Image (cartoon, rainbow, N blue to C red; front, side):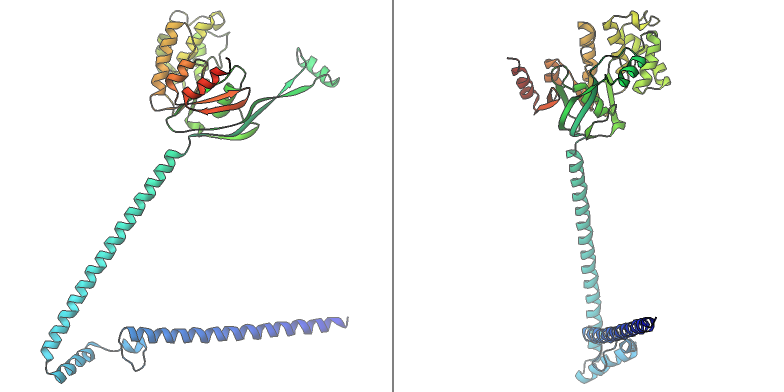
Length: 376
């Protein structure tokens, strides 16, 4: 208990000493500011030639016009040129003021010009950056799937095998660290043998799948993916599938109503629209799917998954012409095709993926030649 008063006294002493030190430093800073202020006033008085007596601009402001003109008059009487001195001084003052005004205007004009030039440079740099920025950036994308090794005939069979621990899975790497860029206006082809992960990559770019690792930087509001037959119900009629598949693609009912006749005309299926799709041949189904997928305007980013190998020879030419219109309409295109002729005729760059691994990215002819050489 006796230690408490001692601690209290020590704390009070520390506080008092701290207060004294702070007060001392504040006082010294105050004196230093006053000194700096007086020196600044003296410097202003000397620069303005305001009199050597005291140098205070407050006292200088007390001079009125009569005192100043009086000085001119006295000066004029001493040299005998009172009127000439007054007129000369006023003339020189006017000339000086005009010169100062013109110099000020020149400086302001130069500043405005410099500002405009700097803004133009910034706008140009920004436009250059936007041109060089990729519209699709695939960054180290990896896609893995878990596949069951056993076969199950239903939920009951699956639960029984799961309880008995008879179900095992293996990991399938569909894409293994894929990276490339697509710039505005490019037509990029993706080639590779079956099962190499080309369609999986397109689904990741469109947002239908999420990668296991890595990311795809793209504005998916601008993406339209054309994949034939997605969302078809074989138990429904062709007409019903037009509305179903169109809704999956993103068309509104009003849009389909307006373009229904175009879809039927292009697919050349007039008279079969009330038939169930399960009774269609694969060529007829492909025709209908292609007609639905391409009836709308081309999106800014167009993804084509094997849409150029549909129907018979005549319809294939017809569909190729439709796709070329969409490709050369200003869209940025990412397309998968096994037709080397189609790739060479339309693509500005090619990405070669083999068994999930990136083999080559570059000029269409160079990459296609390397792809063909692997089979020789």
